[in-house]
Length: 117
Image (cartoon, rainbow, N blue to C red; front, side, top):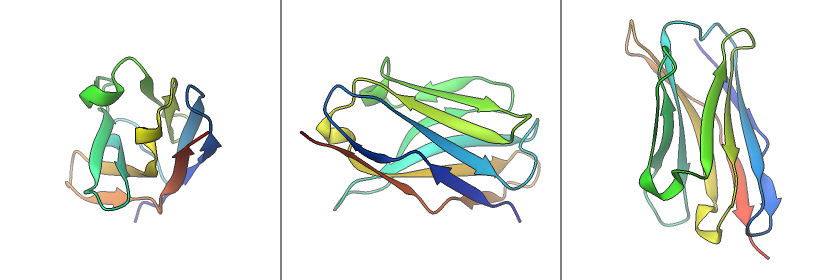
């Protein structure tokens, strides 16, 4: 059973930056597609960014050019670099991993990001 632990959330002013990390308990190399989701109060969980096992990435339109997802398979860690943050980015951010072999999905517990002056 894969466990995912997020860190790096916090309070930041508009225009600021944060880097989220997601540490996996097992190897994510080669077979896991990884993603970041977010859920704001009163809203559905939203897919923010994905990175395939081969390294290709995709982003929701609202974060393109501001957020960057990356992975370090040697450290079993996925990152989300968030720049030019806006109040509407405020949400709980969740890490997700999906095995390309079994299709099993795993979730982290979430980390709060608050963008406010």
